[in-house]
Length: 53
Image 1: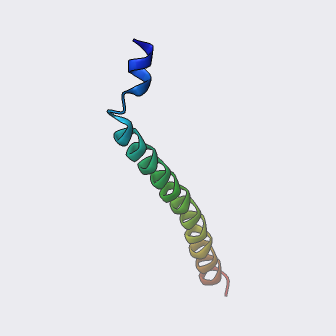
Image 2 (image 1 turned 60 degrees about the vertical axis):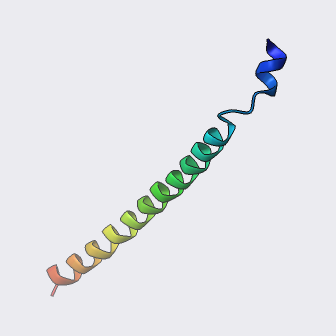
């Protein structure tokens, strides 16, 4: 029974695709976090320039 389980390859592709999708999602989330931080600094800089004559 254990040998049969170890030889069974069904579902392996789905697991591989889910791992790839997870890595891509993590990269996107990390990139958006960095972009948000940079965008916030940009707008704060503009606000400071407008507020001080």
